[in-house]
Image (cartoon, rainbow, N blue to C red; front, side):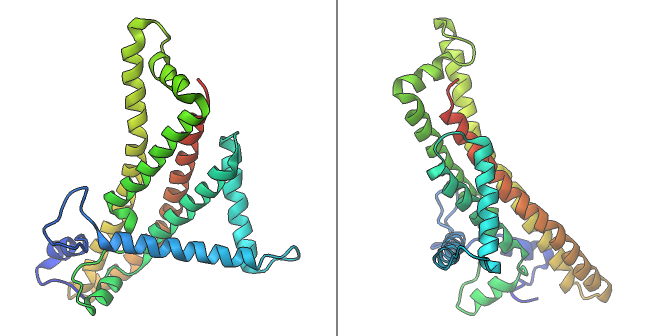
Length: 268
């Protein structure tokens, strides 16, 4: 198997779970994972460019296949936003579209053969390369923290500084002074749980899926035709099932983003 270390399945998995970083001894939340950043930026540029080209060539007549696909996606996302958010959708609509397609594309990188991109990058002297940005907790937290900033922004925009502070200290139990601290504590916990749940849900599902693909890929190097055949069947079955997971996780991230911002926009 291309790029497989000589230490068995455990070392093979550890090798593929190691990110490409500027310095090998980097670790933790602030570590820069070059592979995740590169793949996510590349997919974002590709998605934006394709939709921009389709928008330029859009016609009022019978649409082609590409334009029809774009219109279906736009109507689907706009329908989700319209059902949840009842304010001005000029910002939230494009945001929801970007979140859904960008997360979907990053998730879809998990369908590539496990060793394909590491094998290619090895030709350029890069020993490690992980292809799935959403299986990187740093990336999912970066996205969820961006949503968190938008939640705070919409809270202040819709309610004003005084109104939002009043809500933090008086909801849900009431405005009695003895209840200010319990109200504030509960609201802070609820507020902080939103980015954590967004990040951990997406990361957990995609990390588990990536790990299953690595375990199945390990069967190909076991030296047995029976295990090799099981690996092919397993890869195919899990890949087909994983397509559903990829779409569902992108949809959930988008819907929760809309819901959280809608909750921030609404008055209690």
